[in-house]
Image 1 (tube, helix red, strand yellow):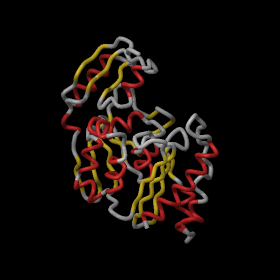
Image 2 (cartoon, rainbow, N blue to C red; image 1 turned 90 degrees about the vertical axis):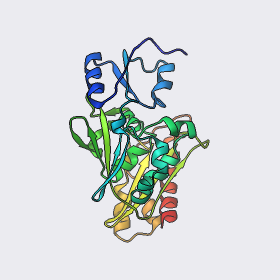
Image 3 (tube, rainbow, N blue to C red; image 1 turned 90 degrees about the horizontal axis):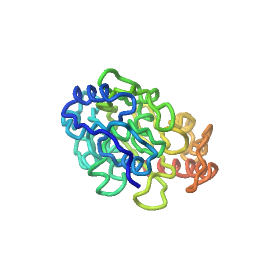
Length: 268
């Protein structure tokens, strides 16, 4: 299908992008890599009145270590994060996730900020942000990841607010991200991420609800000395996953338990 008509403008800075969003009004959308938005436009599932292109905002394309934190700009591409020696050294789980996103063309265009702002339940980076207590930085405030994602495709972002960076804690220890999918380049039917910190294991789940989930019950069992298999049995506790043509809710619960156990075993 052909997208509905819209106005288009291109921003060269954060200030320009925010000004253009404010001028365009509440029906405007930001386009970065466009790997999620363009298919929605073509299907007319999204019909914005105006697109603000932020590909020219070079100030948001960076990876900066700062103390025990890793600051990653919103315009940083998947391929950049997958190859970055800084990411591989300080937060290798992010590099591992980035390397599993889509195909080479998608990785070359898609951005960290686009995935975060889009808030798709099947997106990988929201899982990492939530499980590690990352901070989402916009042009006007800092928001804890656990408070940023509200529901499927829904965040706390205002209509004229722009995601600028994500601040992760450095975590170079044992880690693994597994996602189950029908084909190599598909979105995750279910994903499980694990990361060992000095304080213990962190566990996150992808596509088992309207937004990313931190598997606190699994973490608590591991802290209490449970085996990986015993802890992973709690991965589906409290989950309300969707049922669709790819998997039923019960199958997603089963995958959450299996993938969590495998991820812990492989990380260790």
